[in-house]
Length: 168
Image (cartoon, rainbow, N blue to C red; front, side, top):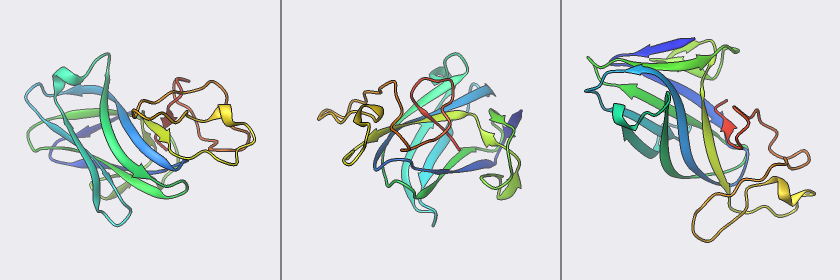
């Protein structure tokens, strides 16, 4: 499924599954204009811009763009990922089929969700019964993923099984 943006935006609601930082956003790109600059924002549910990144065609590799972020998030809270394209510049995003309710195109509900990933860094992981199932805290903002999920903690679909949380 493909979403075409040209002077428009796609908005995906996601829920943070950990207290910490959203360290990166990865989006699956089908095609884009080689002269355009495209914007990705992380917003609070009241629309406040918490983080912003821009990208161009040369940043897309193997159909993906990975954008560094530094957005503080709280487990259980919902946030908005807003992807936009200026008028005259096409951006084709890959999307997955799914239910209505979390994805909009220019404010209109759209069935499905954007194909992509969120890379989280857990700030505090106390009280877990299986601590090796969370991202490991480091002091240099690097993210170290582990292979097991925490028992009953942060059970979210994993896209491409690479330790990142799917945008849902």
